[in-house]
Length: 211
Image (cartoon, rainbow, N blue to C red; front, top):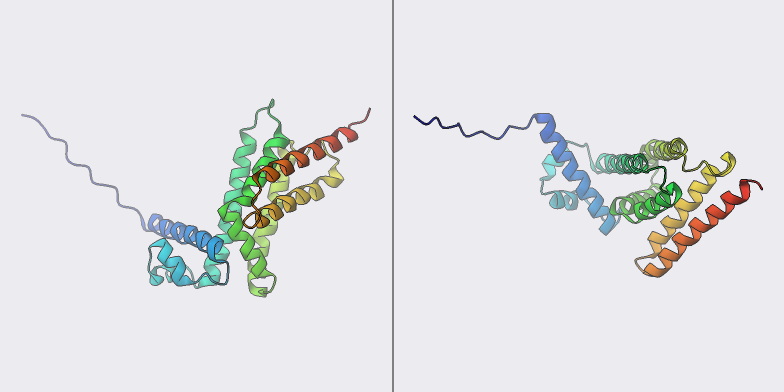
């Protein structure tokens, strides 16, 4: 007699898992919508349509549009920090850490999540509540990025007094580059800027190392 194995039934997700999946869909849809339409044109209906969810499903997770956007901003910075930590952890001693970090920063500034986050930053200039809600996460993110860069040794070649200004100078260069790219797309110029920034920083580092 042949014993047949019972057909295994798919494991039912817990309520917490279902909630996490719904939140993830909403956040991904918010990133996509804000990146394409901008902050003010992104409505709850637009987000829910992109997420394939009802408006009611959104309100079961968030009190309103602002809460969803704040959660999205927090998730973007959390993902970017996690990606940066992973990148640094994978850098071997023989690899040029500065070059890898610069390439990461440039690509991160051009990504869809950062584009959406930048739109939120612009809106926060005139929206006091939005500003107050996202400022702690943004401040914590930049502090954590600097701490990771210090810990990894990426900044070791530079005097401590210029490390933070250096980081933000590079960040603003690549951020400005990503803003202008949709109307002035010059991949050759993008590469030249990356090379120039790298050479500028390495030349400065060498000048500080003494004779």
